[in-house]
Image 1 (cartoon, rainbow over the protein chains, first blue to last red):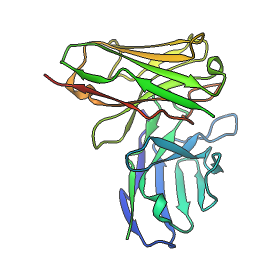
Image 2: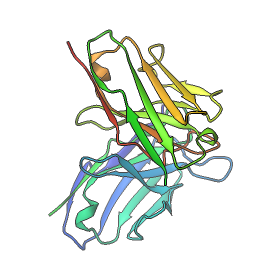
Image 3: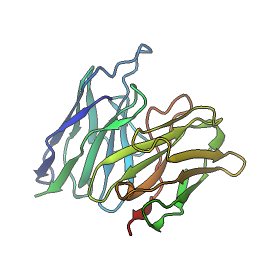
Image 4: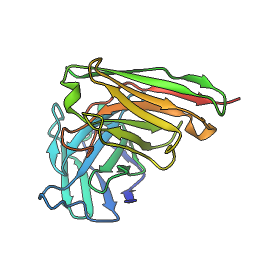
Length: 113
Length: 120
């Protein structure tokens, strides 16, 4: 199974400051179709996970543009340009190419200072 | 808008059974892969099972293989998870989630989840 490793596991950010989360996969997530099957989710407290980013860098419907994704192969990053209070929660990366199983990272907890 | 509503969770004794349901609306249900994902208390997300739109392709996580059965009724826009031989480690919130038309690559919409507690 593919192992997804996120760092850091927690971070505390002052509102208005940037934040960055890394996700590394144990194998390349680049498919022969040219797509890279890496996704980012946010689970706000008490809520279901919500899709933020698909295929490394495309924002899902309704996701603010302060969220951005980058990376290739096995190394990926989620960035929040200016953290807001509503961004608190746990962020997960997901790989969707080496199936089954779909595998998630351990999660990164973001809190506001 | 897409809506997924799970039901059927509850308290069950070890070795018991439970059937979860997920009612879908707001999209052409039969076109899409559907999945079950679970989250143990205070833990991360674990994929459990997925099923193709036609029901012809099904996979399970090793942790539930032989005990859980996923199914769907496209006429009723519903997804199911039959859980047998339940263990304490199956205790979790179970989410249903919709996916892509062409494969179970990701999960775009999630239900609110239903809690399954396995305890004597």
